[in-house]
Every structure is written in structure tokens, then in C-alpha cells.
Length: 204
Length: 165
Image 1 (spheres, rainbow over the protein chains, first blue to last red):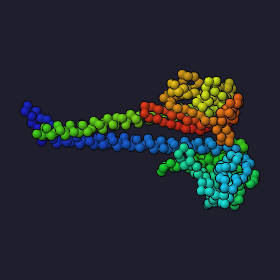
Image 2 (tube, rainbow over the protein chains, first blue to last red; image 1 turned 120 degrees about the vertical axis):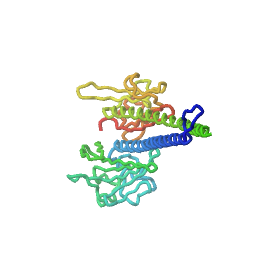
Image 3 (tube, rainbow over the protein chains, first blue to last red; image 1 turned 45 degrees about the vertical axis):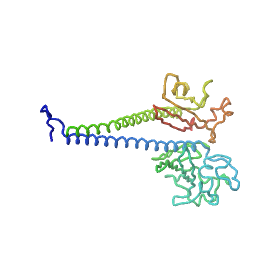
Image 4 (cartoon, chains in turn yellow, blue; image 1 turned 90 degrees about the vertical axis):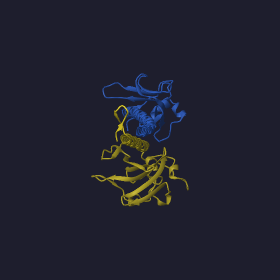
């Protein structure tokens, strides 16, 4: 299907023009797909960074708090967050009393021991905090069983179940989730370092 | 006739490709601007966090510099005299500088703010910050900055402990 012009020179035929247009279209579609993927990847990185930022902020907030401070019991109906003396334990493991449980802050025991769960929102990201008392056994850290913690409350007894807590922070935004595990202690030095576990040394 | 159809097909294809090309170029420009803003913000934040990690404590910013838009830290290294590092945001020039006004950490900084928290996690009030030794009561700081490149913005919020922990 060559086109013979009046001058006798050969030009593009219809099929060739259509093939050229199809190639152009395919190139455009491919480039579009690459651009869309790049934009999507950028948004994904942004969301991931948001989660990590929030987790970092929460880690620092908890690390600064004194491990324990005497506090008065919350009056009936008051939330654990109304405790008048902010301390790490008042924030992450205020009690082991199921009768004091709320939907946003509750104690329970599972196969890994006693755990206190708190949920809050920071900069639009939901943060779930799971705290367990931990004890050094000579070979490693072990979460305290429910029997060692049950009935304890930060406002009831200065005799703490353990001098360290392991905190797992889980940040969720939409379908994205990021988590961080830290161990916070009452007394320095806590020198244990393990993969994915950030150890923060602090004094009361 | 065939020539006319071929020309028409080519014209339609090229005509359709032009706006696509235009939009693609815009999208690529915005990706580039966002990347630049994110890189700039990340670098500035990393530098500030590195300064805070090495800091032995906070200092009050010089008179005339608002603590909410500056950070003044002191660092001590063995065998060296104490060094104070001042980081200041200048809204008029939209630059964040370190030590001197000519050494930029980042430019196109649309906003920069520092929030100071005490050991119990409460924000320092203006009354508390009026005291001479207010930097001693700071246990952590939160730094928020926004870098804008063309229409794209990148915001970072980072918290850090202050002083030896």
C-alpha cells in the first residue's frame, strides 16, 4: 500500500500512518503507566514516613517520662488518662484490673503474659500501644505472667511488678501499618540490644 | 484519498498526544518539585536531630530571636571548648540557617516551629519560658518544618530528647 505521488516519489501509506499512531499511543500509555506508578510510589512513601514520624514522636514522648511517680487513684468514672502524675507506667500500664477497663485502655492476659493496651490518635494516625512488664532472667527478657501482675495498679502500690516494660507501638493509617518495639526501664543501665529493639536508658 | 486519511490519522494522533505530553511534563515537574522539597526537608531535619543527639543541653536563643522559631543547643566534646549551635528560621528569606545566616540548612522553608516539653510531657508555657533557666526544664523538643518547592510541599515533624539520657 505505497502511495505513488504525482512526482513519482513514495510516501507514507494509510497503514503505515496507523501503525505509527499505534506505536505513539503505546508509547504514551507506557509512559503514563510509569508516571502513575511513580506518583503512587511517592504517595506510599509519604504515608509510610507519616507513620514512622508518629511512631518516633510517641517513642520520644514515652522515653522522657519518669518510669513511676506516685499518683492518686482516679475518681470513679474518671479515665486512666486523668491520673494527676504523668509517668511511663501511668501512661502505658496503669493497672491490671479488668474492672477498670475501657474500650480505649484495657488490661488483659494472653499467651505471652499480661498486657495493657491503650489506643490514641496522634496527627491523624491511630496508635495502639501494647505494654508488658519485663524481667531479666539472666539469659534474656521475659514478659511477666498475669499472676505476677493481676490486681496491681499504679495508684495502689509502690511495689512495682518489674523495673522494665516492653512497649510495642503500632501505627495505623488507612490500610498502612507500621510498628516499633522499645524497652523502657526504671534504672540505667539497660544494655541489652537486640535486632529491632531500641533500648532507651533513663533514670527515674 | 489515502494520503488525506493518513494525514488526518496522524493529525488526530499528534493532537491527542500533545495534551498528554503537556500533562505528563507537568506531572513530572510536580514529582521533581516534591522530591526536592522532601529531600530538603529530610536533610534539614536530620541535621537538627544530629545536633540534638550530640547536645549536652539547650540554651536560650539570643535576644530578639523567638524560641518558637529557633533552636539553640550546646555541645561539648572531650578536649574541646563548649560549642553553641544556633538554628534559626528567617521567614522573610524563607531560609533555615545554622550558626551563621549564610549557612543554610534549607531554603524555601515555608514554616518552622519548635515546641518545648518538660519532663512530664507538658508544653512549656510562656510564663515558664520567661524564666532565665527555662532551657534546663526542657526534656524534649518537637520540630516541625514545611518546605515548599513551587506548588509542592513537604512537611516533617520530628521529636527528640534533649541532653544526656
